[in-house]
Length: 319
Ligand SMILES: *Cc1c(COP(=O)(O)O)cnc(C)c1O
Image (cartoon, rainbow, N blue to C red):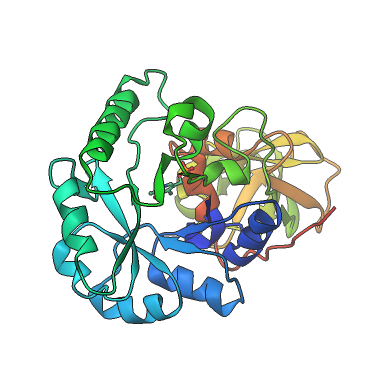
């Protein structure tokens, strides 16, 4: 199952889905019904599971579009008539799901509802990416005990996210729900799928003692050559990179000077003094991939990728 929620982790849900299906994925996973309906509207006919909550009033449209829904409450299930359902079991994430104790009874009750098909049962790991996998293994043991107590085994048992794909083969069951790994992060031997580039809007030389960007949080100590970039936090460049992050110009580090603004950012050209307006600038790419940018911004690559804004055009390169 290729997880293409949040616009394919920022890469574009439809192209990501098409690429994954073309490469052998058989299912798609999304967070909300609107995302699944948008994939159907783009002509994608593969099985799709909504991994999160579907409000009862949206269920009819999703079910009519042949979209599988996640269920974790019998009250919601009353509105999921005619649906193919995957029962979510909370085995330790403490986020969404029937408890392990409730799950076998819930499966029996759901299967008894007219027109409902219990097509799957699944859980989600809280820490399959941690050095210590004991928590994940405890969750897996809970899954096994739930499976043993079920009145029947649904066709699709699933648990693994990307980290578990690589690190917990016992968790593979019938489907693996891979998200971040598809985009090149979160496992060994992966190549990032996305580069994020901008261009230099203006180059300027300023004297020592010049305040840069809002509130002059950076003041030049010597004369400095600066590049103004037409990208800001509205595009997903974290404001927390103000005076901390860097971009790459002509292969050299160009530290961000002063505050990242909504639409513009200033960087030092000390390392690449020959750069000109119009030249390309790497935000994510060779020299600094999304995991590094994320570390500087005190977040994770998931957030850096999925927040790349709609103003940034996506350009797809095919070999
Ligand atoms: C997002 C998500 C995934 C994918 O997780 P990755 O770590 O990106 O592989 C899998 N399952 C569920 C329920 C999710 O919400």
